[in-house]
Length: 107
Image (cartoon, rainbow, N blue to C red; front, side, top):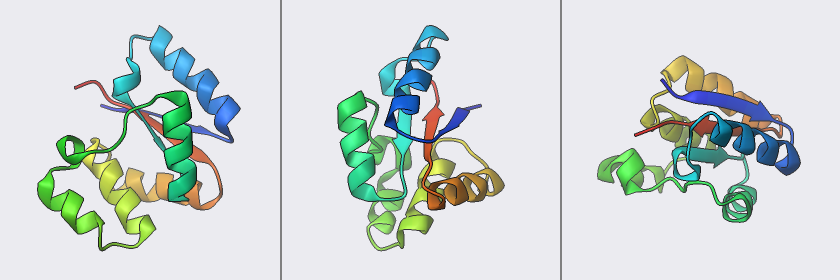
């Protein structure tokens, strides 16, 4: 079961990432999500968290996400990491409100 944290900004994200690492997660286990793709890319690079790739989503979902609206893409990515559809909807709404969502899932 993935562990999910909702934070307000990059500083809080760093604090939660450090907390997750202290709990045994590696940075490769932690995915950071933001509503705006550029913000997500910048924070993922800066905080050195895992990027969503084909291995996380599967080839067909990765290709399909290229043609989806951002909200649909995010919900699909949450589900690929083990969240339920209802959880994915809930956390996507948090992103709509400007928050960041961290999902830690050990492989």
